[in-house]
Length: 191
Ligand SMILES: Nc1nc2c(ncn2[C@@H]2O[C@H](COP(=O)(O)OP(=O)(O)OP(=O)(O)O)[C@@H](O)[C@H]2O)c(=O)[nH]1
Ligand SMILES: [Mg+2]
Image 1: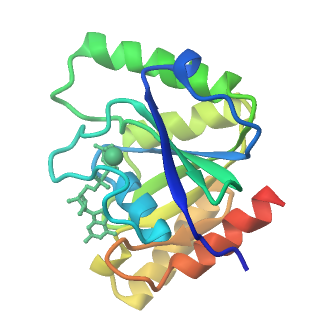
Image 2: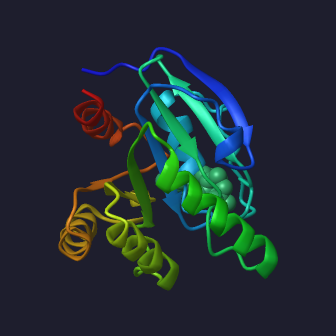
């Protein structure tokens, strides 16, 4: 089983052209601001200083690339739906994000992050529909499961699974419980 031994921060890049070129399979973390993308990286790598997390949405403004074990890369991307970011800035970022997702050659899969507590939001839907139209691979991670009971998690996973038509993995950054399953999934994709 995949064991994360060392994780290296590679670069904070404003767009695709500035991203470090690697041949490693890469996973792109997509989701609303504050959903827990950066916390996810820190939890699965067991390194709490790696990716910057914050109570203030909009903390991640750049494509932050991490090399894990020299086996794969994770791209921590700015979350969408952060109201305080100007429309101009949002549009510019949207363009950069689309370019990255369409042209990053080593991109293996996107991971769409959904907050366990909320219904699917309009911008989640837009992201999902765009991935479908572009025929890009993705799966879903349902974060913040620590807020839900086991039963609620089960029901929510089932409905998201039907809705998105892909694997939906439960997750919480607050404990180790869900990490193993996520690593198994990542491993199955990089083989
Ligand atoms: N209870 C709980 N809180 C979480 C979880 N994951 C993240 N958080 C909290 O949610 C807040 C936002 O987490 P981040 O990881 O910074 O979110 P992000 O998706 O990277 O946000 P952006 O960088 O703005 O896109 C922080 O206060 C985290 O501590 C979780 O699984 N459970
Ligand atoms: Mg972040």
